Every structure is written in C-alpha cells, then in structure tokens.
Length: 603
Picture (cartoon, rainbow, N blue to C red):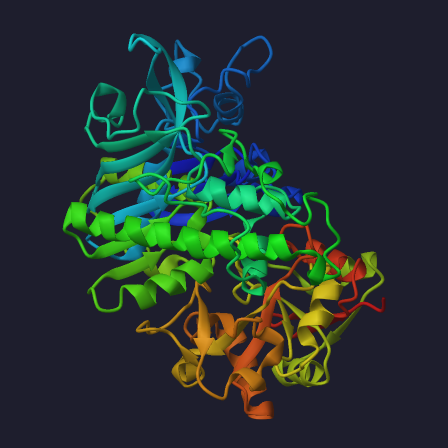
C-alpha cells in the first residue's frame, strides 16, 4: 500500500509544520525553533526539513486566520509562496494547468478554530467530545451590517473569538456556537443571529453572538499591553496576577450584557490585532505602559488589573465549558486556542467542575502551532477514516532527533571555547545540589511552549533564593514563577491534582499538599501554587533517572525545571543553540545524558 504523506503548514506568528506519514506524526515544530527568531512567520526553514523524510507529498494543507495569500506571490509565475516552494522542491507535481488551484494544496484559512478543535480532539484519546476554543482572533467571517434605517449595507469583517464544536471520531467536527467580534457595531442589536451569514464552510448553521466587543483573549491582551508588554505576552500577566487584589477603582471587565461580553467602554478592541484599556476614562494612579517593574508598589493598577483579567476571564471560560456540555450533551471536553495555555485557569476548572462528571483534556499545543497538527490530521481522517490512531501518548516530544558524533560535540564546544568532559547523572545532581544551574539537552524537542526535560534548565528547588537567581540569569522579570518536574509515583504526596492522575504536559498550576511549600521555595509562586510536570521512566528515561538520583541525594522527588532559553528567545533546538546560550549567559553547565557528556563554559 502506498504511503500517504501530508504536511500541515501554519502561517503567522506561531508558524509551524506538521508532517504525517500514514496518519502518524513524523515531526511537528515551530519555525522559531529553527530560525532562532521569536514568533517568526512563514516556516520555510522547517518546510525544507520535509525533504529529509520524503521526496513526495500527497497533500499540503495551509492554515492561517485568513484564506487570502494573494499578497505573497513569486516573481513571474505568480504562485503563492507555499505552492511555489513545494513545486520547486519536487514535493508536489508541476504538471497542472492552474497553480492557483493546485489539487494537492488545500487552503483551510476559513476554519481556524476548527483546526484547533481537531488538534485537541484527536490528541485527547476521546472517541467523542465537545471542543471549547478560546482564541484571540480566528478566521475572518463576513458579518451583515445595517444602517440606521435598517437597510443592509456592505458586510464588515468579523473574527471568531470563542467557538464550540461537537466532535465524533473519525472525522465529524460540527460547529455549535461562535462569538464573532468586529471593530465596529455590525447590527442594530446584539441578539443571537442565525442564517446564511453564520454557517460554517460545510453549511452547518450554528448559534452565534455578534458584537463589537473584545473577546476573552483580546481582553487579556488589553491588560497585557497596559502592563507594558506585547499583546501576546500573556504569560507575564498570568505571572503577575496573584500580586493583585480586587480593585473598585475600575469597572468589571465582563458582564455588561446578557451574553457576558467584555465591557466595551473599558476594553477597546482593535481587530484583528490587540486591544486597549481605556485608562483615560478612569482615575488611575499611573497610566503609562512602560513602568519600571523593579518596585511593585508603583504598579498597583497593573497588579490589580492582572488579577481582574485572570479571575474574570477564567470564569467566562468556565461558563463556556458548561454551555458546551449543555449544548452537546457530551461530558468529554477538550480545550484549545491560546487561552488553553492558561495553567491557572485550567486548574480552576477542575475545582469548579469536580461534582459535575465532566472530563477535561487541555491541548498542550493550544497556540496556533497546533493548527498545523489539526489540519494534517483532519485531512488524513477524511482520506482514511478507518485506521484508529492513538495520539494521546505521542504528545510530548515531536521535534527532530539529532545524532551527534563525539567529534561534532567537541567541535561545537570548541567553537564557543567550551570544555567537554565525561559525566553521569550523579555528577549532574552533585552540581545541582551545590547550587549550580545545569541545562539539559537530549532527544527530540518538546511540542508546544513548555520545556519537559529535553530542552530544560535544571536547578535545586529547595534553594530559597533560587527563583531570583535563575530569573536573573535568564533575564526575566523577577515576579515570574518557575515550574517543577516530579516523579509520577510521588506526585500525590506533594501536590493536589484535584482528581487527575498525572500532569505530563505541565498544563496546570496546582496547590501544594500541607507542609510542602516550605520544602521547595524556588518553584512556589506567591499564591502557593506550582506549575508541575509529572514524569515516568517510560516517558523520559534519562530525565526520570536524574530526578530519581536527586531524590536519593536530597529526599526531594522534584526538580526545578524551566525552559532552556534566555528572555525573549525561542527554546534551544540544536546543540549549537544550546552551547551558544551558555556562552551568552551565566549558565555554566550543559548535560548531554545520551552521550554521557558535560559541557562547561567559563563565563
């Protein structure tokens, strides 16, 4: 039987490629990991890697929030740049009459949220589920507009912000609900609208709310920008929130309408990119988005707005989850879209839904990079609906596997004036317990934004000064917390997982068990939580054995784990990236457990 090769290509700020062979993931990785530029678009560097695995593709599936790629044209032939790339490299045929309608190139720009749903559903292990997608601005949806006399005028662009889908294996993903938001008022009312304007590309009618308000993620972006960061750096806002408190000097962010939409007078959307806090309408003590974070006492409104947007937004998503269960009758819920990376909210759902029999799966690649995975899988299941593939246990390490020779390791180290020596797990644990930072490089890189032991920086979680020390070395804001990785068999003695058996993808910020917080101060946030990863020997042999060695030395079965990068940079991908990071930072040690090598840079 002929092999089926499908490449999912995500354009945009989380540009990525997923390559499938007969439905199995060969690799899935973001462009920024290879190009070394954060949020790099147009994944040509990773697309080139497809040639290492196959010289022919059956389908190329293009994903983005828009179908239009006409502005990206090649000289003379006038193709879009993606069709041109794959044709020039022989991966798709050139024997077609119209390159604009190439039979092997599928453009799924109209169904961005559905691709998030497909990624989460297929990787959840559920045979049926309801998907809740909470995103910044998904695909463009033309929205009818009427003038003051009620006459219909030219439609305006709307953007899907929250969606609900009913999912049935193998390939049925049906739209049930959407919130579609615009930069301007689109209709004479905000009542629920039905009709041809609100059908998915398959022609299924769904319940829709149309508004000129910010969606849940856009509201979070507005607060993030007000705090002094880029709109999409929401993780910093999540780290700041527990420093805040309820503050009556500004209004509620949500709940001004019966649909619980955001407060349009306070949060001003700018679709498709960003949103803004209308701080000039309120008596804020500071109103510049470039404040110095060295003194939290100067940041009361920023702390309190971070608190407000975290607590209010997670309540809105909880309502969506309950709405999804009610609409579908299905208690298996999968969550994706950018808000799915909110590990504080993910833990909150578990507490609120504990008595309702709802099973939640949160997709680890919830950002837009996951749409290349969802797109490739969706197309494959249309071709081969019979083959059952379990992606649930395949979701941690989806990058490239590198096989370095001793000579290559030595030459790369010498390039950065580093020294290579032999080492084992015990040697590394001795370094860590002596309060040294040790970076870890092994195997395939992790899928998604979390470091899970293959591209990680390790430290001693028992050090009371550990958070400040590593934040300084990584050049991050001092208030940002760190994660921990714990042996699976010990997790329930140390943390309250609220009914979960494990947390292998680090998607939850969880409470400690009584008496634990003071034992691991370096990885406990100001609110007493810790974002954790559980690990078994089967999932990651070397990483598990290192932590086991650390437990034998200290009695603590958990190790300080953070992503192997410096502030503002992508996670390292190659050995060269790893050693260069050491050379440009205060990190002295790099451990290669597969090779039994320790690389030291004297900074």
